[in-house]
Amino acid sequence: MRTIITTKTVLLITAVCVAGAAALQGADNAFKWRVHDMDRPLPTAVTPGDFCTHSAPSDATVLFAGSTTDNLVRFGTDQPILWKVEGDDLVVTPGSGDIATKDSFGDCQFHIEWMVPADRECKGQAGCNSGVFFFSQYEVQIVQGLDNRTYADGIAGSLYGQHPPMVNPCKAKGEWNAYDIIFRAPRFNVDGSVAHAATTTVLFNGIVVQDNTAILGSTAHGQRAKYAKHADRMPIKIQNHGDPLRFRNIWVRELGAQPVAQ
Ligand code: MG
Image 1 (cartoon, rainbow, N blue to C red):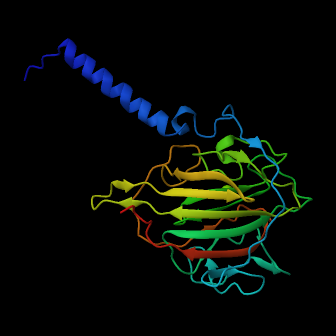
Image 2 (cartoon, rainbow, N blue to C red):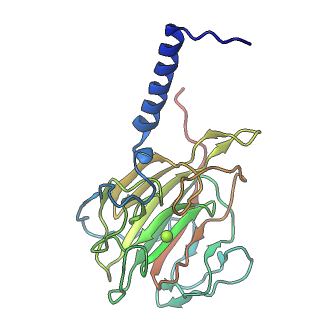
Image 3 (tube, rainbow, N blue to C red):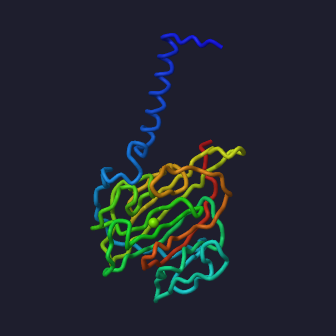
């Protein structure tokens, strides 16, 4: 078959390409930078106001409130976790594996308080790292974010390897931080394609750092994230990166469907 390329056709193709590129870049800056690009601008440091702790509301599933860990399991098993309970804190035991919720969750509100010990040495991604993985695969990064230089898409409050936080309100080592996260799950078509990307809103020490941010796919290290169809509900994982971070007041609330304007 002979294809006739006219000036009009060339202009049309050019217009479509330019519009497509603009849509990608306009939607987000994520494609403008290499994954973990050290030249990507870091978010401005912001000093948060007074710390406000949040114990679980009455309709939450309590994951940790200072004693029982019955609603948590060793990731990928139904076995009790091997992290330590010290006073009101849950402490990562290096080498004991990730932990996860016993139940599965879809759309949810998630709260966690975390702290890097004051005497801990942090070097970029090493030494002071953890993270919350929704559906066991979409990470909101936890890492010491003050006085610890690393790449912008990997600092505290980032969607790891994808979106840096809008600002950096991380506290110093030895001080508590809090995340309040609203996670909306991705929706898939029957053929496995993405109908709606997952979205996340993150308040970091009371400050919005992710605002209904579209997630690009399952968290990956050093490569572009991609989606692979999965169940409507899956466990939430908390990462054991080999560093003895401390946690408290961990809870999750299920969310109904987002209201639609009538
Ligand atoms: Mg991490």
